[in-house]
Image 1: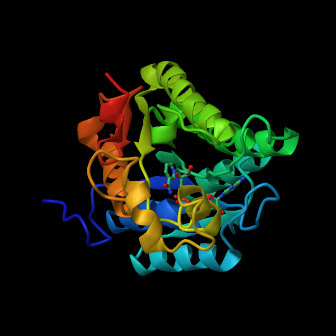
Image 2: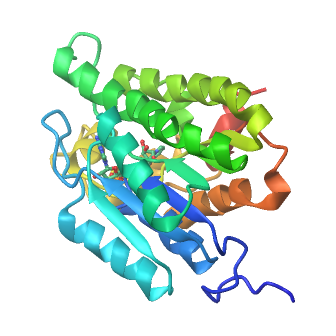
Length: 287
Ligand SMILES: NC(=O)c1ccc[n+]([C@@H]2O[C@H](COP(=O)([O-])OP(=O)(O)OC[C@H]3O[C@@H](n4cnc5c(N)ncnc54)[C@H](O)[C@@H]3O)[C@@H](O)[C@H]2O)c1
């Protein structure tokens, strides 16, 4: 019988379980809904509360409930928890609970992240550590929680979300850049650790993605310091200069397409790699 992708019952991920951190909204929600559409059961973790050093709102409990609703509307099971990726014990407890309830953890998408600004003169201990703890240690915690299960299962896909700022640098975001560069080193090293267990470990490096992380006053003012209240239209041209193709931002579904590919059977011998989905930005800085 030929599997029909998109029915929610016989897609390529039927019988698989995907854990997604930062799954309440944005890219995490997009990954959750598409993997569910292609048959996977889903488990979501999100903090669902703001952070002091982040100057735009993070997701809410309502956002998380909406992602659960969208996954269930695809006919799949969905677990969720309000937890912080900075807490290793919480991540291990959640993933162990997912395996107990849903049977396995086949896909781990370490997606949760925050964007903070501040030059080396401005960053304080909290600004540095909330960013690095969330964007780098949080990725470690997610992989650490999934690793023993995937080794035992002798299959799995680990996908980390870096950034074009994990392969290049801009002013005013040293903590974000440091964490996202670190994600790539972490990913490549864990790819070695998991290689004999049939588990692949890869990073996706997005360009500007149209989510709440970029559509907020903090980033708009950074892009257009000449304006007091820049609008979406007024930042678009500046945002496009970060890319090579003349587009200001991509849709979350374009990152999902790379994630789905890395989860697919055809990607079984791709590990330790970085896929740039950044409208060509990496053409400026990668071999
Ligand atoms: N949007 C972009 O332009 C862009 C570009 C490159 C990389 N990224 C990366 O993509 C990933 C997804 O971001 P997005 O664009 O969907 O933004 P988003 O802000 O919509 O989503 C991030 C999610 O992570 C959650 N989160 C934040 N800190 C957390 C913590 N400590 N514990 C648990 N959950 C936490 C938030 O509540 C939110 O739901 C992030 O890692 C981000 O750094 C985004």
